[in-house]
Structure formats: structure tokens, C-alpha cells
Length: 345
Image (cartoon, rainbow, N blue to C red):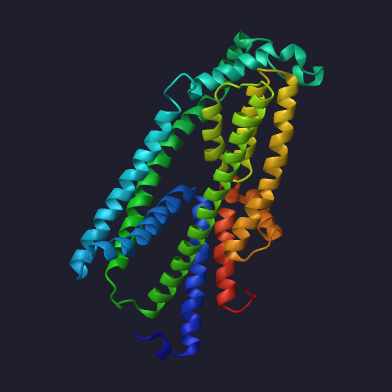
């Protein structure tokens, strides 16, 4: 059925129901902590649809069966690559002398050895030695045993949701491989909402990857170039740069985590190096907050303060998931408002 043949009042009803259903779905995703499944599905969906036309130009397949076969193959390869990428990242942080467990042990040793050089106001909150740290940690584990068990369960749940999301994203991409106008007017209105969400995801996520790469690049310049110029060689440089990139994919919180690691490792050399590292990272990552909003804002035509306010608002309601989802949700909302001519582009 041609959308132009539908009376305006009836079409408005379809759009209204589609908007409401989409809004409820997005809130439900945050409320029930399904964001990882949504993002995994959107990632596979967008990568498959991005690769499909390029491969069709090379292979020059014709017919629906050929296209379905190609998309199925591409989707399988994308899912396999993403799974192997995740396993590779896990292996990277477990292998070698500068692995993640070794980094954490080094941080514990640094805190112990540097305790006496820290101000008294800071020192009183730190353990006296590694043994006390282990004792405190064991006590914390006993006190929060239920929460720790819940974390392992949540990790398993996250893996399952990620795989399910990938499969769903591949199935939707496969459905789009066969272009048949069989949607009802309401289905078409809902499909347009989903397409807008996918477009918002693509714009924001690719921008966030650029931002994380910029963070890792400048952090690498500081650790590999600037500090050695002053005769300072820190350990675990490769691991810290990799963590900076991965944590950079998470707005705000990720920067705090990577900054803490670098400052503590810098403390292994001296208090002054730790202070200089902290000052450098504050400048870089404070600028990154606005760079984040600026790059993403240019993709979705939003001001920096709009993105930041959205992140604060969703964080207050949904926590970390709200911070991660905020740029994508806002991009989608703005695209809907622009289409409805309620705001200017």
C-alpha cells in the first residue's frame, strides 16, 4: 500500500502509535538492562548493511536467493569476527609480562610503597601494606558475597545477551536483503523509527570510536614520547594505552578509570610524575568531554550542552547505562523532532 494514499489523520495515528511504542521500548531497554543486547544487534546490523552493497558491486550477484546467501555469509563472518575480537582483547590482557593481573599487582605495590610519601589526609584511607590490603579485600568479599556472585551471573547474562543481540541484528539485516513492499502502513511507520535509531547509533558509535582513538593517541604520546624525554620510563605502557582506548568507548566513567590507573603507575616513579600525569590527563580528558559532545554533536546537529545535559539526566535515572545510551537516544529523539518539524535542523 502506498503511504501517500493514506489519509493524513490515519497516517498521524499510525505514527503516534509507532512513536509511543518506540519510546516505551527504549525506556524498557534501560530499565531491564538490555542495552548491551540492543547495541550488539545494532552493531551487527549496521556493519552488515554497510558491507553488503560493496560486496555486491564486486561479486555482482543477482536475485533474492543470491543476495540472501551473501548477507547470511557476511552476517556470519561479522558475528564470528566480533566474537574473536572479544576473545582477542581478553587474551591480550591476560598474556605477556605486562598483563592486566600484573598491572593490578603493581598498583597494589605502588600504593603500599608510596604510602609514606602521600599526605596524611590521603594516607589514612590507604592500607598499610599488601597483607592488610588482602585482609580488607577478603573481608569485603565476605561482606558482599551475594553481590560478587551476582556479578559473575551478570557477566554470563551479558555474554548471552550480546550473542542474542548479534543474531537478531543479523536476522533483521537478512530481512532487508529482500526488498519487498509487504509492510502495512503501521509496520512501515515502525520500521522508519527503527531505521532512525540505527542511523543514530551508527553516527554516534563511529564518532565515539574516533574520540577513543584520539584519547589513546595523545595518552600514547605522553607515555611513549614526553615522559621518556625527561628520562622517565613507566611500566605497562602497552596495557595502559589499550585500556585508555577501551575505557574511552565509555563516556566519563571510562576516563576516570584509565586516569586512575595511569596516575597510580606514575606514582611508582615519583609523586611529582604522578602529579604531572594527573595534570596532563585532566587537561586532555576535560577537553575530551567537550570534544565528545562536539564530534557527536556535529554528526547529529546538536550543541555540546545538549549532549551533556542529556547524559546527566539519563545518568540520574538509569545510572551508567543512561550515560552510555544518552548520545544515541538524544540523536534519535532529535531526528524524530526534526522530521515532525517541531524543531529546526
